[in-house]
Amino acid sequence: MLEEEYSPRKCKYCNSAHVVRFGHTKQGTGQRLLCRDCGRTFMHSEALPSMRTPAVQIASAINMYYEGMSLNAIRRHIQQTTGNYPSDSTVYEWIDKFGKIAVKEAAKYQPQVGDTWICDETYVRVDQSNEKVANPYSKSRKAKWLILWDCIDVDTRFLLASHITKRGTKDAQELMEKSSKRAGKSPKVVVTDKLRAYLDGIELTFGADTKHKQGVTIEIENNIDLIECFHSTLKSRINEMRVLKNKDTLQKFMDGWLVHYNFISLHKSIDNHTPAEKAGIKYPYKNWQEIIQSPNILKEIVKPTTGKMKLKRPSVSMTDTEQDRFFNSL
Image 1 (tube, rainbow, N blue to C red):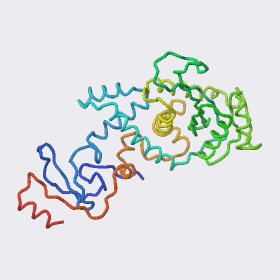
Image 2: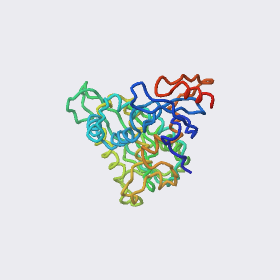
Image 3: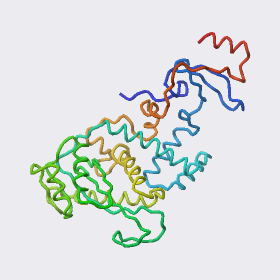
Image 4: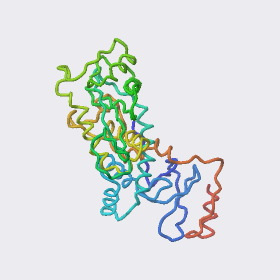
């Protein structure tokens, strides 16, 4: 059952309904509230705890980022629609903060996938140079390339694992191990291209029980281009991501992208469902706004209090008699 979302009539920190008015800001521009349960004070607004921006704007920015918009385009959109103009670092901070928590939350759900998986690899360029080098085998010192390995289930389109490396003989094996751990099972068939690394990687991970097929097969007709289409979509997103300067930032992007791809984005190829739905996962959130406003996520961003909090009397908008009556009622 979906937990009740935050409401301005409830505490932003503990979701308690024992909330009373607690004066106004010094500028007189907003109503302050006090939670009688946790002792915290907060503003009466749609902003998340310890934040000034409404949740709907943050959620919109995160969704636009994973849909392929650049940070500058996201900032302009927010300014045009709300009048707020956050900095690049602010937008990226939202994405980084809530992306990490969403990845942790999504890992709690195990997909029920099929027995045929498709694996492939592609080159992704990450560097700070604007030099136009399209060839991953180029010897240019400025152009830096990483190899992105992915494994997708044919039946559900669920992206089981992504693995990022520079170059190594055990990369395919690590991809298989990650995929098997995420699925909670071993596949019967793994389809790959003719890269030699897959031969040892699949056999060392699954043994003789899993059949390895290279290239096009009749059994996965109309699905052989599945992962190529995925990589094409992914690269179109990455081309706009100017902050992907190294392996670490690419890994952060892929972790968040995995949540967006599996749990949020609707796919026409599976009748406008998410891969998570096709994999039997009852994910309680339909979009990024529901994710960042959920009590489970709020617990992650709110720092726990130590001991009993000391409350200060509000400096404005309450008479001495009103303040005494209020503190006596606690």
